[in-house]
Structures are given as C-alpha cells and as structure tokens.
Length: 487
Ligand SMILES: *Cc1c(COP(=O)(O)O)cnc(C)c1O
Image (cartoon, rainbow, N blue to C red; front, top):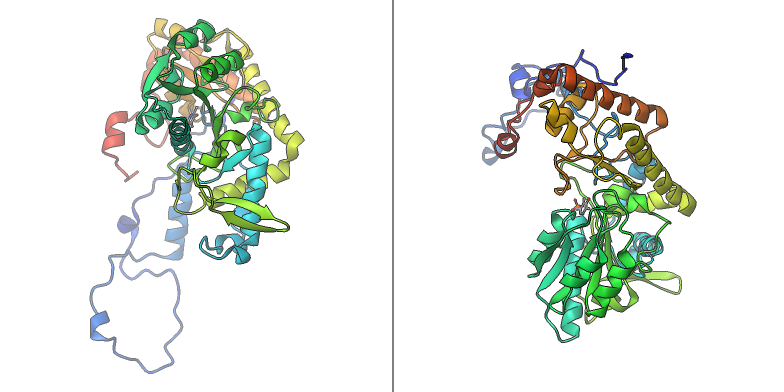
C-alpha cells in the first residue's frame, strides 16, 4: 500500500502547566515608571489581601496562551467533518463586521431613532432569510436551533388554540435530532416516532396511518440526518394539512439546499435556520448561535415580537401583534451572530449561496462514492451534504466506530459524528462542507482507507487510539461528568 500522507503530526505539542504552577514570586509582565509623586497611604477599607494571582513575565503569559491554543482543533486548523453540524470555514470578514465598534457599542434599549443602522440590519436579514426559505414572516430572536424549535412549537400551539383546538401529539421521524422531540415535549406535545422506510426517508402511507386530529403536526428535517432528501415531503405535508396539522421544517441542514428548494412550496409552515451552521459563525463548545424562525404569511401574527419594520425610509421595532406568542429572548437575539450571517449573505450573494449548496453536496457525494467500497453505506442512494456509513464490516475485525473515530485523531482529523442517527448501527456521519478542496478531501479519503486497512492488520492499534494526541482515550461518561481541566 502506498504511504498516505496525513496532516497529523507527533512533535512539538508542548506541555503546559497552570499559570499558578508556572508563576514565581517577583516576576513581572511590565515595568511601571518610577514614582514621581508623593506616596499616599491606601484608605483602610481598601487595604487587605489582593487576589491570588501568580507573578508572571510577559513571555510566560504569551507562551502559555499560545501553547494552549495549539492544543485546540477547529476549522481554522483542519478538516472538521462533523455531520449534522456544518463545520465549515467561516470567512474572517464576518468576524470583522461583527466586531465593528458601531455595532458592539449599540444598545438594544436605545430609541429606534438612534438605532437605524442596527434596525436596518435586522430588517434586511429578515428579508434575506425569507427569500432563502420562501417563508415571508421571520423572527430573529431564537438563540439556537433548539430554541427555534421551541418557538415553532409555541406557534403551533397558538395556531391550534386560535382554531379552538388543543392537540396533544406530534409526529417525529426516527432520524430526527434529539432536540426535536425535546422541544415538542416542552410544549406539552407527546412525540410519536415515525419509522423511516427501507430507503431511509419518510413513507407517505406510514404518515397517513399515524396522522390524526390529535396530532398538532409533524417535524421534518430535510435533507434528513441521513443526508437524504425527503422526496415525499409535499405529499406528506398535504396529508398533515388535510387533518388540520402543521408542518415544521428543521432547517439545520440548509447548507445542502440554499437557493435550490423553497420550503413553503414543499408545504412547510414553520422553519428554523441555524445561522451558526449555515451562515458563518464559529460554533461548538457552547458558543452563541442563532436560530431564526421563518413562517408562512398566515402564521406571521404569532411570531415573537417585536419585528423590525420599515416606514418610508426609516426603520422601527413593531410591537403591536396581539396574537404574538410573546418574547423568546431578552432583546433581539444574539446580535453578533445575526451580523455575521448578514455579512456572509451580502458578501456571497444569491448565486454564490446556491453554489455553496451545490459544492457541499458534490463534496459529500464524492466521499460517498470513494469510500463505499471501504465502509458499508447505510443507504446506497444519492446523498445530499453528508453521507452515513455503518460499522458492519469493522465488526468483523473486532473494531468499533469509536476506534475508527479515535484513530482519525492520530492522523490529524477531528472525528466525524458517530452513533447518530440512531437508526444506523455504529453510524459514521461525514459532512465535508463546501470549503474543503478536492486535494484535502482526497487526503481524508486516503486516511480512512488506511485506517480500515489497519483495522484488519493491527486492530490493537485502533483500540489504543489516539496514541499521539495530547490526551489518550478518555472515559467519556466520566470526562463529561467529572471534567479534569488540568490538561
Ligand atoms: C444542530 C441541529 C439541531 C439543533 O440546533 P442547535 O443550534 O444546536 O440548538 C437540530 N436539528 C438538527 C438536524 C441539527 O443538526
């Protein structure tokens, strides 16, 4: 087998103690000018022990943080093929825009008259997101995808209430993200699982059998979390609507279909977008997100208020929506994330957003085709922005999906999403995104093939992986419950 080059390295990852362990009494990071005024005694109430800060030199501090930053992995370091997360490269221009002093110093409680710039951003962004989804009503308030789902479910409940009914259940496909049933349950709906068919998508007949007048509607992710397009969505939407229900679109996978599908024409009534996934905000590690909700004309009156509106040439916040579900955020949403999305959309333009989706799908389809002889595909059908493999063959070598994921770390890659969606045994879900070039994708493919070969020849190597990373294999439950932050 030819030697596969990997971006992984094994040298010069430097150890670093805590600053408290590193400090030495008397070290300083700066020189204070000689005192040229009379000394004054500090007021008694201000005297006492200062905080327990270590004494450090400038170089101690600079090296400390630089070394810690090198322990990190992110999209700025390498490919991050985490399925269902769209970990793509986020252009730095969007960071610069979000850090513009006029924006960072804007206050959400200033009068409209003094907030014309920020209101214009909100108003325009509402319009852009409406154009991208085909759904005309937009609220920018929800702070993440799951929060958008919750907002959507509150809108479902408000809609049914306005029709004099209180429905108790909601249909949720077995491939759905866990936040879908959780958001529905928070609104008091009982999630009813819908089995996907042998093609990995929703079956019209199955939905027809489950949909009744007790069901508030259905939550559909399209493309779904298997990376497959729900081709029956229109017929399914018709069935749900015919029983008085509504269709929720989980738009987390928008990166696959921007400028290509129109959610409203697919029969979707409410949809959230994950701006931090599709529209360029670095995410992960619990950082801020934004999950705006887009709705049909009919449902606009239920949106959280206020909305940004335009009168003549000036912008204002409109509160006067008597049917609104009320606020879902203290102010206007995570504004910095909204600005990044605004900047991303403007810098790309409509044609390039469409191209993003085309390239994201092309990249995933290429990986699927190149690896389908190496790992068994969960569903051997055309994929959208991500492809899902199972661990069927790895089992024969006594190796698990987790072993493969950990071995990728030794080779310089962040592991893909694993063991999700739940319907695929030992799922390996790869989402390359549009920002990886062919050479980098080829290198990734080569590394996966190399690891599968190692599984046959030296499975023990995989069981021990990662072997050259900063930390070895962790007890994942213990690591989550009892984190050790000492490095
Ligand atoms: C990421 C994701 C969500 C949840 O979004 P958050 O922004 O993480 O709350 C919901 N559904 C799908 C399909 C997702 O991939």
